[in-house]
Image 1 (cartoon, helix red, strand yellow):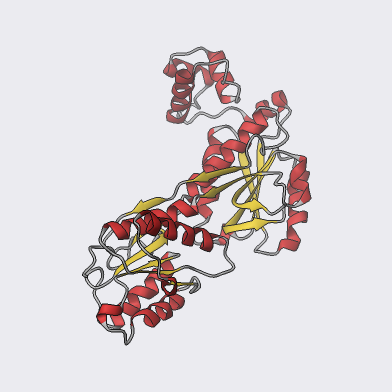
Image 2: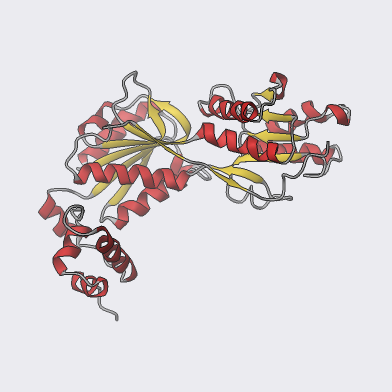
Length: 349
């Protein structure tokens, strides 16, 4: 049976002292250990599968080294669970563990869930939502360092830092991709009107047209909803019974499920993709975007990166002894990423 690696093993592999390993893995490396050495120590610890003794760390630091995560329904979401996955990656790498509670979109359970986590002596809290949305922050979150992921404080003077996707830039870069292919008549099925993400993506769409000095046709922007049948109906309104010269040459969709509906409508009408119509998705939803035929060009939401960034900010605040994550700024925006596949191509006219 292989013996468990020790801090001395990590020190030898990284070429540093035992005390340097202790400082870095206890979160006190900055200012005490060179950045290059910190990276070597973390890499050595990962390679040796070494983690500090959690009980000993708690006794020394007067911390539980537990982070409470509350979600509205991320735990049962088909893809937003990546936010929690990214957060947990960072927590484990720094000697913390996470405890997750899910309210299943019942906001009346928020306060009780926060109190339950605080009763477990968590060192910090994170609130995670499915989809970008404003949040009435439960009051208990102000008692320990806390951060918001994929949501933002609805209070006029936000008290907690939030980490969200850069939706405006995502909408702009998705539209620019189609414009670069020569498309000028681009329809946008923009999700639902009550979603905070929808107007931001529309803003990016408009910015791309303005940058290219092209006019926006307002009737090409429609709030269609989020599901496959919404995409199908939206595409049929744009394409069915319309002469080819008056059809859009590309349809942008506010998520990948809408794009599935658009592809189904195109197939029903005998249109090829991308030969007759280019289709752009949003989200890069696993087992949808990459398995469609043709595979879907889409704007990937940086869900795992949001979780990592939010947890990093939270742990930095805890280890620096801060009581809040909201200073000096209250917002971090994480860029979305264009994923090029086969559903987009040159405009046919």
